[in-house]
Image 1 (cartoon, one colour):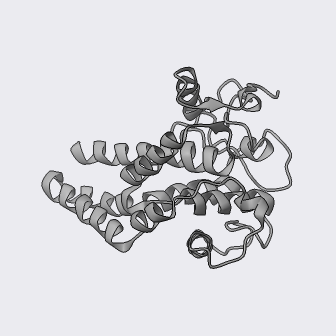
Image 2 (image 1 turned 180 degrees about the vertical axis):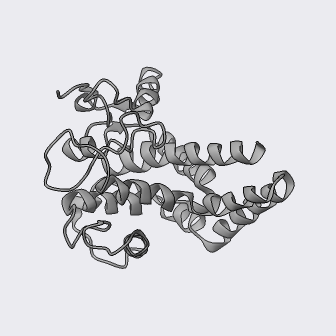
Length: 250
């Protein structure tokens, strides 16, 4: 049971900072927060993602490119132009690294106002940091695993952020239902997104990319992350942009 709880904590904590900080803040800037809050989110993203740490700059720029070029040859990740999910994620990894290490020229519209903390990113993305987290995960399993099958979850801990990416960027363009006709294959994976904290409402998001609320189109589309953001907004820890507070389109 301890191992299952550990995986669940890693899954939802890492996912929260991916969708809240990397996606809705860095890429789409659907809310504002203080410079201190931004730095704190960098650190908490590192703590929760660990060996899977993703840079706000690399993620933000790449995701903007995904929206601009969705399901075209320039899309950093599209099932339409990759033979399988493994080749797609390897290409995604390569493009992300090139962006994050600033080894490729990027148009200003993709980089404008994307948060950047280069010194911290170098540390958090280093092999030293990633391996240290991996050793920590392995030690935790060694101490608390009580059955052989629990060790099968260790690779999930190592690779959780890429797994999150596969669920949305591959399956979220193949399976599910559509609320809006858009120029790409994005779909809503779940009627109630209990697994991906709102990220599964992918078709809604591709229609209204700047909205903080990925759900809210149909009664059953509850975006848990958005309601956490509403609470943070009430507490004045963040400030939601007015357009992001629109609840329903249908």
